[in-house]
Length: 345
Ligand SMILES: [Fe+2]
Image 1 (spheres, rainbow, N blue to C red):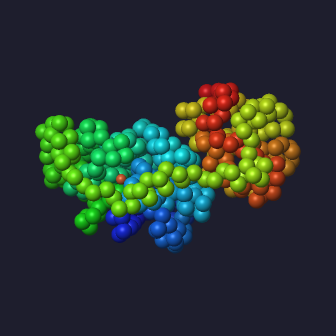
Image 2: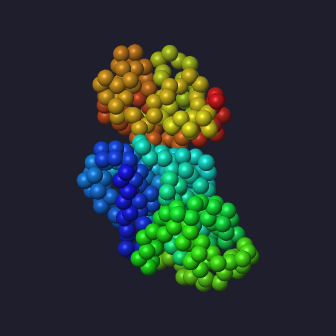
Image 3: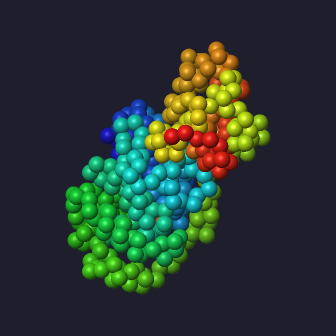
């Protein structure tokens, strides 16, 4: 197991890099834009392949590294389904699993600090974002924060974990790096309350100044979506309405890039093939499944995913591999459903 806790001293942010082995797939949690070079250097030094970058919530104190990491590694950007961020590749919800090869995190919806706050549980440790900090809790006075919801998230979910569960937060300003659930239960001053009302009262009296970067970071973090216009300008994008007309045509191969769990939850386009984004590079190069489909069977490949982000990157990769007729459905399954495109379970 590779587990690295990285620190941004400007914002006091902890970023976590996880992988099951050298040479394997990696996941990064809460990356900071200014540190992207450092993360990628470490990824290379450890011989990892970064495949997913997730934020626990929309940050107000630093600009996320999600967009930059995606642009530089073609990794999948991940946030919770409650997030109002314009586009991420993959949205997760309570009960989902956030997975890369050999690593599986259980997703917990833990609102309160913001309404899009999630925690990720991995065996003996939990990544609590800004919901539960070491001897503190995330403020609840902006970004749809709600002290009552936070009390429920902490007391109803996080503190129900075994006492020896390690707590890895998204921030610390005092130099602490890790705690445990048992330790926080006993020594976190914010948690020594007898009722939800007492907690709400406590949180309402903090009178904290706004984060220095808030007016810059929040708008920037709302827009991390890949610029799909460039793909459209080259004529590689189909609107859902255009794509509907291609359904059932023998010269078309619709290819679903999503993960199995997304397919089960949101349905698929009838007649489409499944070729997960993680296998894309292998699939489009000579000898690969999609390469054969395009060249030997002369099919035009039309990629789709959840929101059009993975499929836009896939079109580029397919074009680079010489599959010049490859296209994608702009906006993905989300846009497809809004345009009343047919789906099947
Ligand atoms: Fe935060």
